[in-house]
Image 1 (cartoon, rainbow, N blue to C red):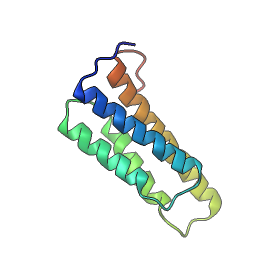
Image 2: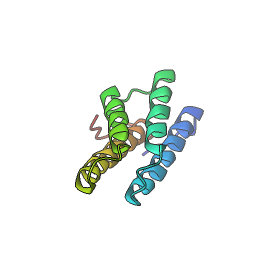
Image 3: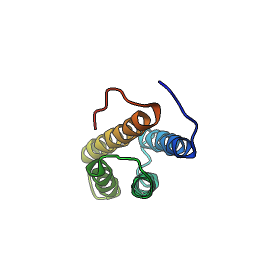
Image 4: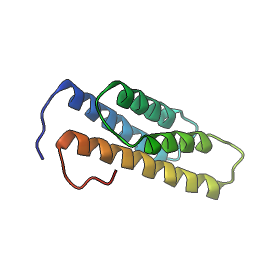
Length: 109
């Protein structure tokens, strides 16, 4: 693991830290916040404006899952299922960003 403290890498790590905050809010069961939507919106804008190459399907599916979790009429089990999928999507996005920052390795996406 080799880290170069360029502005692009530091910005990516700040977005990963924001992803940790989103995961903590999802673990607490706070589904009424827009943090997951803000995270995926910021990640989409970041990937579009920089040279980072992340899977856009991962970002768009995470954004769609964030919108689905916001529905209030779903029962508890369905909300928990979509929250699990959203948490997995946030974690996979963070993993892909960390692979971009810390160099080549076993990349899933």
